[in-house]
Length: 203
Image (cartoon, rainbow, N blue to C red):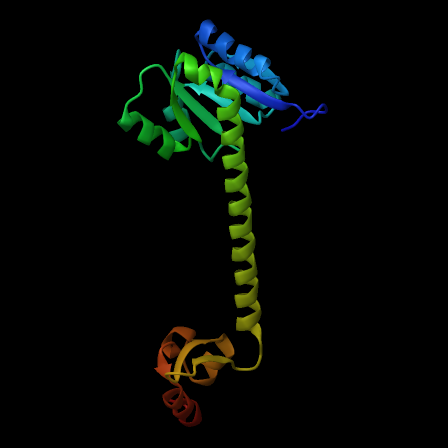
């Protein structure tokens, strides 16, 4: 989360001091407005996150007490911030595993990568925010649909939704189903005349 000065809180999880220093120097040279902390292990990562939630985490794949991919894969729930994983020697298999586990990106360390870290971090944050906005919109849509179905099923009048081209019932509420002696599933994909006759005869 942003602090009072609107700085981006960056947590570097790296046990190689030279690599951590290269990242911090790159961020400082670019005049990126951020507050940087460095953890040297997964245990320290957890301690730091408990004190202050970062906006983004730059994490080495291989740490003294475990792998970043395993941290992501074994988490009880997704972390509420993007984690960018870095490694000295990457393979396609490891990259796929790490991304599937939840990393926002997977990068092979190099002098060029360290120099471009401000841009990499900015792109990762934009991608994360887009995903969060899309997820929020999908959740809101799901809630609206659920509310609609709750209202639809609890209306006291019987309602059928009919495909006028084929005369087929594609949906009905609970009241309509009870009127016809069945449940909503029985009346989907049925001809409206068949259901009308059944409702009149009670069969």
